[in-house]
Image 1 (cartoon, protein in one colour):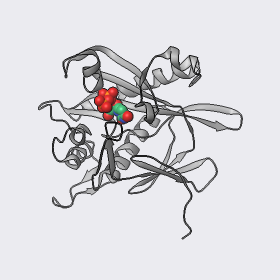
Image 2 (image 1 turned 90 degrees about the vertical axis):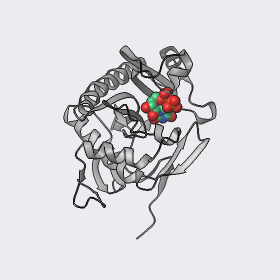
Image 3 (image 1 turned 180 degrees about the vertical axis):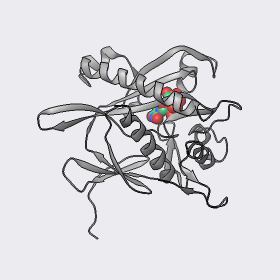
Image 4 (image 1 turned 120 degrees about the vertical axis):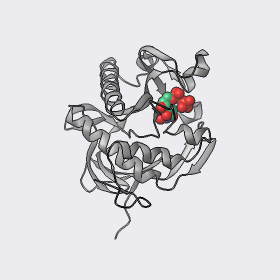
Length: 251
Ligand code: UDP
């Protein structure tokens, strides 16, 4: 088989050229990083779980009319996506105070916010992804005002949908990060939800015990990282329990 052309390699994913123009293959790795690359690790099986969880979430979002880059699953670690020009922003939605906002504003972790908070960070590793405001986005032309309005609306819609979806399986959606990209079809450009949505970029707490089931397990050495991700996949019905010792992901 001829070697596929690698378009981009990030911390947790690789993008390869897709089978047809305008498509890419998104490959999920087992690598994990935290604290702006200061901490590195490999969590065997994480890529398989994130591929499946993200595929499930993007499919559900498409069903309610959210336009995403997802086309179809390919294999255990890969999915076919539409090629987009990534907008250099991380859009974070918070329902409960945790992580960087706790430190920045001196809040108590776990405090419910009166309403969901949407924040923008400028995607730039050298600068440590700084928090920015909408005026910076306009001033430096990272996105148009219309695109910002669309991103906020979609991010809040995703938050409502995911809060319900996770709530139904006794998981609290504390916060999450999404990214968007521009997709051209001829002269028409559309902003699509891109990247991934998985326990790598959400905070997910068990509603009863408060147990953390997400990447904070890796960030803060809280215990078996994969087990948390597997628990999320199981609760979403993405695991078949053919064998209790060797669970198999269902498609
Ligand atoms: N997040 C992410 N990638 C980043 C930064 C944050 O996926 O580069 C996610 C993170 O997992 C959490 C949310 O965005 O669900 C808010 O993260 P926060 O700003 O609290 O930063 P952290 O303290 O996690 O670095």
